[in-house]
Image (cartoon, rainbow, N blue to C red; front, side, top):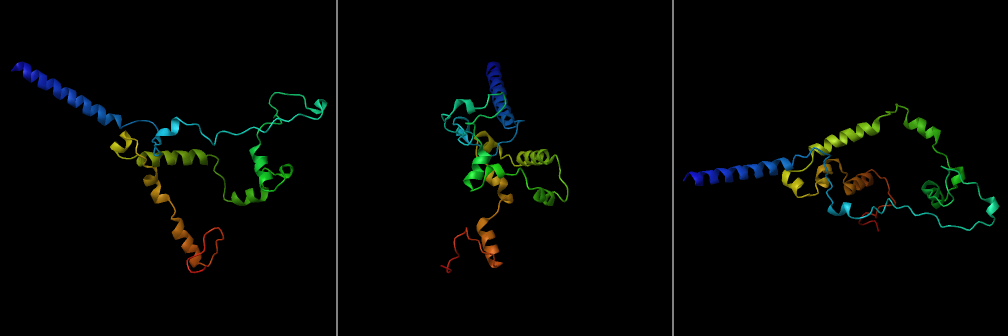
Length: 178
């Protein structure tokens, strides 16, 4: 009889240990992940791949600049200049910033640590909306539910602007106006 009681106590201890392990496994101390995409770590990031420009044979090798550490190569990607050309501009005339616009948008002051402040606020928001215990265990995506209060109903907003008489050429015409 005493041996049966010891076996029963061991089973209870084992069960209690498993329950505690399961409960504490949901209490991770890292950054909360609201967007749990399982394939995220197994595939390359196609947006991080930036193709190089094609190699060209120079007309005269004497015209090539002397290579120097830190200087860009003729085949290095230049995404900003490429975007300016794609939009019909001239990258040689490109300006790093329109000083008039910069002065206007910073007329009420500029917070130099805005990125850190927003990152801290978002981390706190994600910790508060990290999902329920079983959602964290089974990697359920809770991103859209967590940020739903901050999302914009695009159709309601379009109708609001239409009621005000503002036309939006990028939106389909309202029903009955065709």
